[in-house]
Length: 357
Image (cartoon, rainbow, N blue to C red; front, side, top):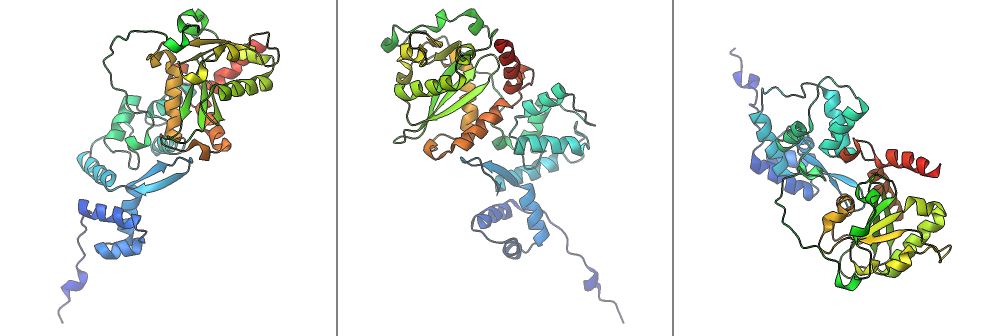
C-alpha cells in the first residue's frame, strides 16, 4: 500500500500582507475577537496574537490612562525595517536587560531617549551593551524597537531652525511695569535659586478653567495650579495661597517672577505685595518683551511637557487635582540634560536647605 503523501505535507508559512494588517486594525476597532479575525484571514490565532503584540503602541489619554492600540502602518513599517536590518549587527547587541530598561523608561515612565541614556550615564548603570542618544533615536525611527515609535516621544529629535531678529518692546498696556532688562543678574545667569517664570495654560474656547504654571529657572522646579479662569483675581489668589502655605519662606523661594504681557498679570503691583503684611513686598515681578517667548524659555518648554499629558482642546475642568499633582511630581523627578541628568527635586532640596540656613 502506497503512503499518502498529502498527509505529510506542511502548509507553507507566509508573512502577513499589508492589506491584511489594515483589516486587522479595522476589525479590532469593531471589537472582533482574535478567533474571528484569524478565521476571516485564514490564519492561526497565534499569528494574529503575535502580530497585534508587535504592532501595538501605548497611547496616552488626557486623563493619564494608557491604552494599547494596534496600528497597521506601524506594524508594516516594523516589518520592512526588520527585513532590511536582518543580519545587521546592532550596537545594542543581545542585551535584553538594556532593551527592557529602555522600553520601560519610554513606554511606562515617559522618558525621552536622551533622558534614558543620560540617566544611565549619570547613575553609573552597567549593561552589557551601550548606545548613545543619537543611535537610540535612529533605532526608534528605523523601527528596530517594535512597539516604540516617534509617537511615543513627547520630545522629538530637534532640528535646527533659522532665527530671525525680532524688535523687542514692552506691551503698550503695560508701560509702567518692570522690564526683564531690569531683572537682577542672578536671575539672568541662573546663578541663584528663587527666580521663576510664569504663564497660563488655557483650555478650549467657552471653557474658562486654566492652569497657572511656575518654573524655577535654576532647578526647573515646576508648580502647577488649577484656576477657575485666567484672570488677575485668580492669579492673585494663587500667589496668596502659596504665601499662606510658605509664610516667611515665600520671599526666599520667590525672589522674582517673570511673566509675559497677558492681561491676567497686569496687576503686578498687587502681586508683589504680601497678603500677610500689605506694606511689604513678597516678590519682584518682571515682564518679558512682547513676542519674545524665548525670554521665558524654561516655562515654555515645561508647558509643552504638560501638554503631553493635557493636549490642546482638553477641558481642564475635567482634570482632577490628583492628576495635576501626578504630572507635577513626574516633571520634578524627570532627569534633565541641563541639570547633568539630575531632577528638579534633587536640586531644589539642596538649594532650599542652603536658603533656610
